[in-house]
Image 1: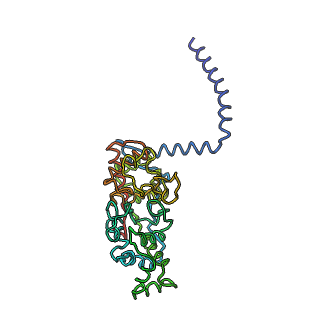
Image 2: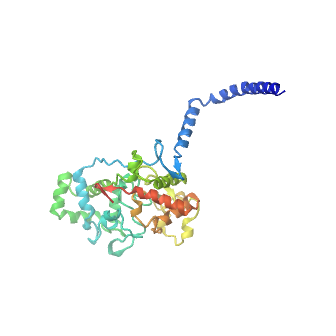
Length: 357
């Protein structure tokens, strides 16, 4: 009895296979190689979900990561870099001869002044927190609201803004032309000597040299799997899985796109005391869709650049991550997850001129 039952089941199963196989082939034809590629990508993604031990990452797949290491090799005019370095610390750029670029962008403290808001000439407090000057050459726009398209434009803005240096190009050029050193040096580099364009060009060239390669995470991306710990790898995994990497990616882990501050909630209403600076890119374009939109900041050397955000409202990384999770991702992260992500962020501190920051 069982034998005949088995035979009938086999025949029925064969009939089903005969019916299904042509259908499967027919369905597969429109996709062809794309289906195979999609399957392979899925397999790779599954494999790159990373082998774990005790919920900690032990290795990352060879799949190209959304973050790229900094190339330490730069092709810049060294004489311009040297002149720009001198001008970066030149207080004569300010109206009162008291403020230089380095006043707000201190290279000894992560390229920032570590103040909630910087202080310009005559003690005037700026409207936003000063972002780091390190790796600013990788940013697609400058300033929090992206109003300056280039570093050169940003130099001009810093010199002429009333809450920064409060000077003018005529005043700055007049001061520098009284200096034998600057007359000689500019004349050796630029045919037309000291001009606003050449001053901005020299400072911007120096700022482009302010890269911080060879972070432990850069070394990891280049294949040194021992460069970061298992806990730091786990932090990176969560950083990606929770969606942080959707904005913080590329060479600079940010700086390459605009995003609204408060996608999943009203950050500014909850914080209160809304200022004009909080309007973000709206102040540049006047478009309603740009209200509360800002350039995504870089996360490189982030452990050195507190306080955080354009308003300097987050004193610690713990606070900054919790706020980002709530208002950008609509999630409440556990303390464990925040701690893991911070461990990952510590791997992003690089080197300047061959020395750790």
